[in-house]
Length: 344
Image (cartoon, rainbow, N blue to C red; front, top):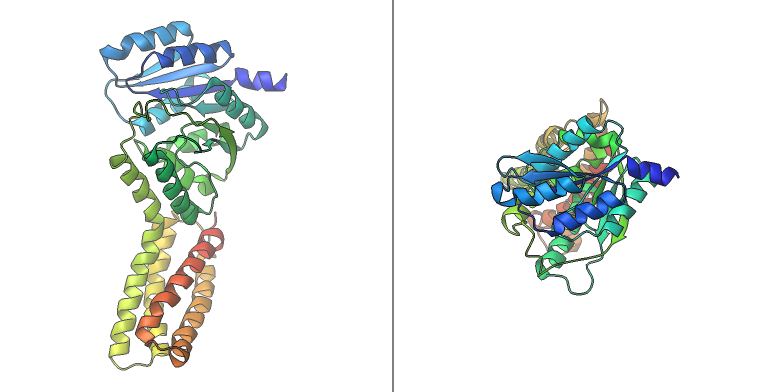
């Protein structure tokens, strides 16, 4: 009984741009399953108005954009409308309008949201069998880079089938992104919102090689990767500052250990400020700088020792050995900063 009561306060939010008759069928099935349904007409215009009219007659509520504003904006419009129409909402389940999500899987995500009310529920596709090349490899690459940037081992970063916890809905309205990058922004803000992730395996459905999707593999993927690499830019910029200073000081006649220490002193302040205020949005609290410099001292001492010691035992110069040393230390430092220094 508790599960059915939760279903009755679950809202299925479907952003739709130029949908076909499949949306009508899906809407009817969801209404028959005792779910509230909210559609966002993202600027389809009069040509698609009849489809939304039939969905409304089937029992759905419809919010309308006069022009196409993008999936991210449509999702935020839907979240806002949900909070206004149904203050008792228990969770929002977002789904796509192109037939990729079955009613059975939508219900399973809703059920998982009832069991894990404080987690973001992801309907994770298996990517097995006949999956379009761009979808299979796009997900693999994005999944790898996302895990590096966030530390979260998410199976499907691009799924549109999600259960949004009520506790985070107002925060999700404030997250940047108007198009497909919005869903990635949500994943990148999980730490800030203090919510976890729970994945539900779902069917992988592609109709006509996924031609019904309005996802542009070049334009929209670029938006997603810009968001991800913002997390990595700070360390790369600091690395450039550090290496240039190290090379100049070494060329001026200073010994490697002194050159390394002075270059690291300057680049660490650049790195701290970029990480604190650009990458991690001011997180970390009053002890962030102390924790950062404890890490920097340990990392700097280890790095300086390695660039001084390794050229004595390997046939390589101090200028060259710094590159692999710093790459390894960068990876370790990034994880420590992400999970300890700048933790919310």
